[in-house]
Image 1 (cartoon, one colour):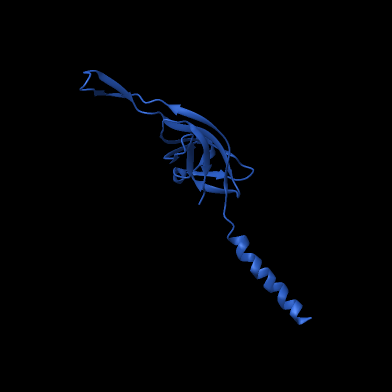
Image 2 (cartoon, rainbow, N blue to C red):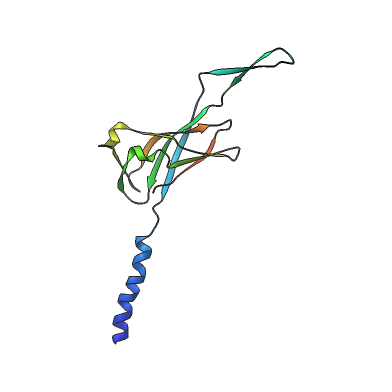
Length: 140
């Protein structure tokens, strides 16, 4: 009988660290890509032909996204700027540098996100010749 009493608490102790160390996940539910065309154009003088060639920067790649996290909690909205990554059709990736939330959802600088509490955000990444193929997020 005594070995049974000792093995039950020991079994519970071995389960606790795995439950406590479970990694929180972030899921992009949907996104709509938005391309921001640059206002400025540049040019290069071709010395051989004598022609002035006009060049244009590629568009800034942004998106409206809806995302959730595996656990519900308040997060500091201003610290989520680098939490998203876009994959482009040319195989390159770029991290987000700007994330904007609906002002009505941000309370005292915090935004509540969870599995049953999806949040919408406007996210901008980098300039790219090719459009966004996929977006992932990582919460720390």
